[in-house]
Image (cartoon, rainbow, N blue to C red):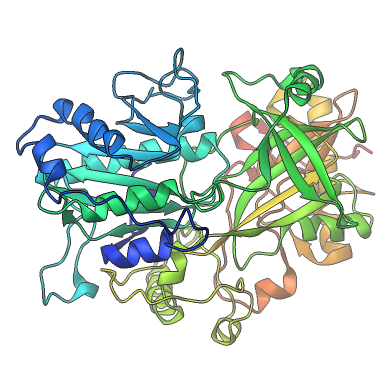
Length: 539
């Protein structure tokens, strides 16, 4: 998990700029009110130097609460309480957590599903997860991510907490207050990476910390990072979801939520969801979630897919719509949805097009020295043709921002991501759940080989679309008798012309499935199945 965030921390951003860009002091009269006037050494008196970490929590929360810095919210000491609703180990106990004032914590104190602001407290300056460059240092050659054991440990904890936080909520971004020894940093996280502020001495002057808390508490839900198109269900909707979606009852408590998705006629449709089939275990990347959902109006069950696509990839919803309209069978049948309004990452905006190109030229130079799959199994990254990127095509309408403050120069892993959410008709079962070898072969045949209606072959011959991510995990069992199949997950699919005309693209070379040719069956390695060419093909 920690390795997945290497070279995805951008910093150090000047503190005042961090506040102004991410927590703007504009808007309603309430939000524009001045921050409470505090004595600069207020935190220093409450938390003397060399205070052990376990003695810092209470005075930290007390100063914030007693001075009215977070109206409408409350600080709760969660350090001694694991989240009882975590599905994946280890059970986490975050440092003081900020919740809405009216949240009931009498039975469950730590609730990642309700977290609004995360604080991480460390007792020593040496616990800093990052390293600001000395004055006059060339920032391009400076290593910003700390390489010390203590720094790496702190960074790992931060990543673990925020990964669980994002998995449990629908968020576009989130904030952390990272306090270590006498210093503080602010961190803004999204699915492209994280932006980290310069450190500042909050004990000699707590103004920045007070300003951050005050501004944060006056942001609306969207400003604090929540998805405006997902809401909590009403009590009546909860009862309906419990009844209609009980087949997919989640392993641990998950709230029933309502997704608002535009239909093909542009009229909004609402779908109830009660826990996803699998929660993403990484903070950055596609972070795909799938939900069985129920629409009250149509009284039908569907599948909702939610993920963060790389900006240069086509919308999976558009791919599926094209396949549907061209009569390709054994695929998820598109219903509605697509890119979510304003669901775009910001971290990537601080890496210029020139910096991206320089990093990727170097990366591709390394790949040319490799062989076979090593060269093609590069880390996930989407690239447009050079001529298109120079013209600004293929990118979301957001504009690049000045990132001259950041350290480092290898930014090939940072890519803009766009929240993509759509509905399809079929809720399938994993291929590993097959009940007979004959049924399994028929499912696989339907997915991408058999005639007259192969999914992958039909997609290519009718639409010139190539799936590019065939694996056992992407073949699903459907049908009442369990002997029909679909080829799922077309999020990495591309038209043939786009592959031919571009540089190295985001792709997956699967070791699960090996396609021999269009008249032979496959080898499914992770299921231990190896099939030779068949004389008679299932229909």
